[in-house]
View 1 (tube, rainbow, N blue to C red):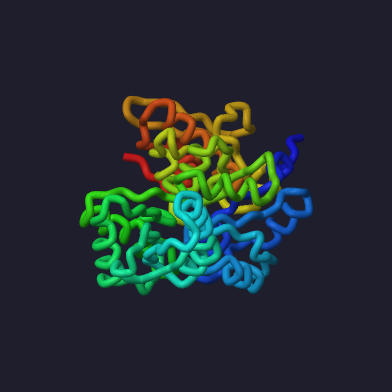
View 2 (spheres, one colour):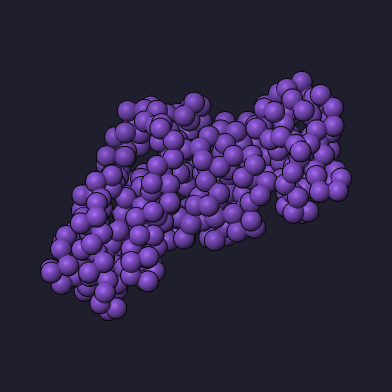
Length: 340
C-alpha cells in the first residue's frame, strides 16, 4: 500500500486564499489535515501573494480559525519584495509604497524608507494589494516611474482575488494600469515567480517541498517555475475544466479535492501515474475525450476520472469531453464537465 503523500515532503508551501480559507471561513478539513501533516514531519509554511496584512496578522487569523500558526510560519510577498529592494538599493533609500501599511512596514524592516509621494525622490516603487488603493496613489507611482532609473517591484500580479462575493480585482489589475500608463514592467516577488517559494524553503530549512494551491496561473505555475512538485486542490479559483486546458507551465503533479489528499491515498491522484488504480478509461474519438467505466459515485473514483481526463487532454490537446454510459455521465456532472 502506498504511503500518504505528505510523508514524501518536509515542508508544505501553502497558498491561503482558496486553499486554507475562503471568504473569511476556514475550508473544511484544513485544520485536522495540517495538524496531522505537521505531526508527520511536514511543516506547514503559508506563502501568500496577499500584501494587505502582516505575517503576525495572518497568523492570528489562522489561529482563530483553528489552524495554529506563528508569524514565522507565514511568508508574504511584501517581505520578499522588500528583500529584493534591499538587495539592490542602499539602506536609507526612499521607496514609494503603493499598498497597505503592511507593505510599508516590510520596507522599513529592511532599512529602507517608505514614502507616498513622488516628490520625496524615491529610488523605487513597490506595489502590493490594498482595497484602499485609488487613482491618486497610482498617479504618484506613475510620476515616479517616468524616471527610467527608478526601480519597480510588485509584490504579485494576481489579476483577481477570491472572496465570498466572487473574484474581485487583485494587485495585478492595479499593476496593469501602471503598465499601460508607463510602458514599463515591474520585477515580481510573488507567485508565479519563484522568489516567494525559494524563501519559504530557505526559511523552513527544508529540502523536500510540496507547493499546495488552488490557482493554476499563480500557485501551480510557481511550482513549475521553481521545479517543485505541486498539489492542486479544487477548493478555490481553478476547476476541472481549467485543469484539462492547463498549459505545460501550469500543470500540477498531484490532484485532490481538498487537503485530505495529503493524508488519504484514496483522495489524491498523481496525474502522471498511469498505474494509479482507476475504474475509468479515456479514449480519443475525433475531437472529443470519451470517459467510460463504472463507479458508485465515490469521491476517489471521481478524482481518478479527472486525473485520467487530464492525462489524455494534455497528451492530445483535446479538452471537450463526453460520457459513455450513465455512471460516467454522473461523474462528469459532479465534476462540472459537460460534453458536446
